[in-house]
Image 1 (cartoon, one colour):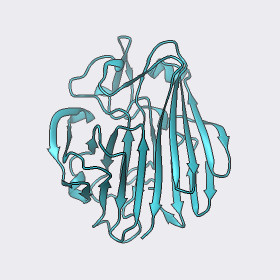
Image 2 (cartoon, one colour):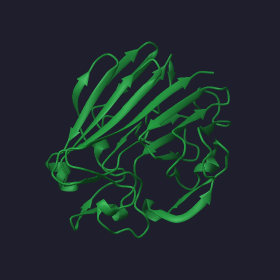
Image 3 (cartoon, one colour):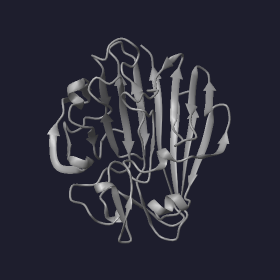
Image 4 (tube, one colour):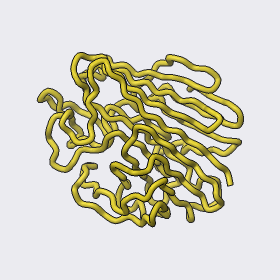
Length: 287
């Protein structure tokens, strides 16, 4: 575990998955610590896919290969490239085990930095191979709900822009259907409650907003600003004391998709030698 500190902020990052395991501001513990009774992760990194693959398989060069939900990065050990009191950069590089699942030469780096404004996490993926590389990546942080103590009731998600008040229906196996269902979004404000998460995650594909916030009834606010992540998702379980605010470059397989990974909707193709980055900044404002 790597620990970071600056001013009133503290953070802890595991070498397993380069996962942020704790983040506090002036004594306010904000990140979900993980609990097997509900969800035993805190903020997994998603790569080389986001969401579910049909039947738990991806197809590359005509061969089906096993791939779990959100890929394998969260289960792999990262090495430390750099670290100081307030930042660290961790790397996962392709090896024999990853190539058996995903036959591409990649380097994925995750950088966590505590700044005066808050916590910044940057994902960078590089194609070290000699052919285009299909990939998706994302961040899946879970936050304590209620945000600043008290009750879960009265919390809301506030988007920077008005979003469509409907999201895709997630079919069996986590697949994205063409059907849509309404969500209780009033302009930029989505009131949170158990009923919102009674079906499945809320996925705002191609969202207009480049920032959104979890707002508590007492005015405390956790804001997530994004660069390079076009899709947003909210996930929890009815009664759970956490809320996941997710940022994705891609999403799960569509219903009926059985093609090559490179042809899957939402996957990006990275040219040989090229690098792509995406960034998240978290800021907490107390009441």
